Image (cartoon, rainbow, N blue to C red):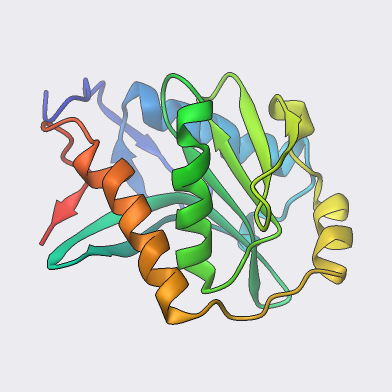
Length: 183
């Protein structure tokens, strides 16, 4: 065992073909990727797993991984972040992560524990739907992207979003979590 994850062997990433450690959390991530392709109509090529994101809070720095970013028309249109347990406590950090990843508001941010999901409006933070079935299909996301304002966020706002994400994802992380790279 490393960190807080029980390693069950290895598995092949559904989207990239990479060999990854087989953990219960990773099994949920793989199930979600397959669901988005098979049930929601997303091309695998538009999804990027495990994107690294630098977080800053004052002099503190850390790198976390975003579970999935989905791009449309050259922009991040949806961010999906997995975390076991309660979803409501993960709303604010997934919004901050999505905004930092894109440098602007993102049309949709999804937080999931693999069994349930909350779908958030990336601009307002309002819950737009609940449950995995409520994740927008490829066509619904395309409609949402069409009229969305992708204006860049001011640096001061991005700094605050980074501090929020750092607080939840780094300061609030289990001390044995080896998926975070503290710098």
